[in-house]
Amino acid sequence: MVSGLSKDQLELVDKAERIARECLAPRAHDVDAAGVNPKESWHDVWQNGLLTLGVPKEHSGLGLDMLTYVMVIEKLAGGCTNTGMTVHMHSTVMRFIEALGTDKQKSAFYPEVVDGGNLFGSWGSEPETRGGTAMRYTTITPEGEGYVIDGIKHFCTMAGGAHRYMIHCNAQNSTDALASQQLALVPHDIAGLSQLDEWNTLGMRGTVSPSMKLDKCVVGPDAVLGAPGDGGKTGVTQGFSLGFAAAYVGAAQAALDCTKEFCLNQTFAPDPGRVADGLVVQRTIAEMAVAMNSAKQALYDAASQWEGKTPNEKAVLGARAKYLATVASLDVSSKAIQIAGGRSAHKRMPLERIFRDVRTSTLMPPNLDRCLELIGRAEFDLDTPLNRDS
Image 1 (tube, helix red, strand yellow):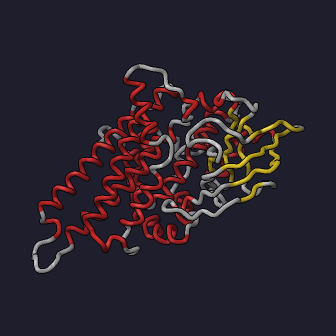
Image 2 (cartoon, one colour; image 1 turned 90 degrees about the vertical axis):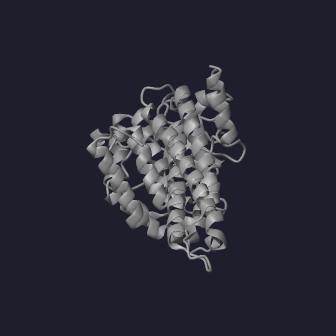
Image 3 (cartoon, one colour; image 1 turned 90 degrees about the horizontal axis):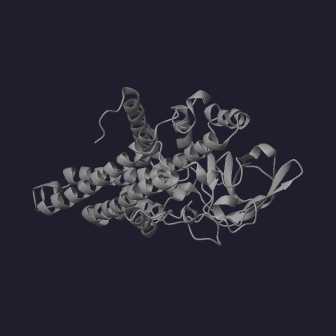
């Protein structure tokens, strides 16, 4: 579906597919069942050089273009949705460091990933605000030579698993959400950080995203990335949507592949033919394949146009890709269950896990309604209020 990819790009995508098949997929069931961070899979991703997707080349990373990046995330998510999603969120933090970090910060943080194999999480959501809003009640206040962070976050992905967490804070106690937003990196073992509840969810159980409290957490001056409001100007935030779409596509493609294999190998007496020989099944598989092709094309097109676009333009590109990936992945994972029938509810088949992961992960902002709003406003050439989903 993508023409003109270089040999290096194709080799990276192929490597991601191999890692997903050989390392991530065999563990995906256990990660889901236990509801734990996929640390062994993270280790495999690191050892194979793919944990540095968002680390610049001058800091010994891959520094991937957006098209190759989403294709790699897609392949990883095809093996384990949880691993693909967490690697994406980690990689987005790496892009924030590239955009906002000083040379000193980059020299300090990047080796923790390149040499140490550590992941960085991103915690933005809060109990008091609607998903995706830029408004933060978590405060960051100057004190001495550093800062004090106070607040409650929920959906804190990779809690207890990542090495550092990028906290989205309010630096000025202001109602101007974008202008007051400050990003700060805190270590996993910082004093005052505590878990408030259990992560026991429908799907995406291996992302381990409970609510967390930051109670007078003290960080040094080098923990802060840029000045208040700088994060919203980078266009990095909008990349979350594109990576989410890649993860949805990867998971749904895995469901489609599993269903096709089932149909090609399953027969039911007294019919001598395979399930794949049935016209109704062929029609349904065709609908699934067309939906996947459309979602992938939108994703790859958006990624190909990404560089050089403004944050508003990226928001619309991301919304188109995320909308189509959401609709397609929900449809495909549901039809996979329908075709395979009652046996697909068994844990021994991956379809029920993928179905739950897709249904859960597609709730991430911007949701379907917000995606359509962003697209619709662009069609009318209206300004897009990014402070609602920044």
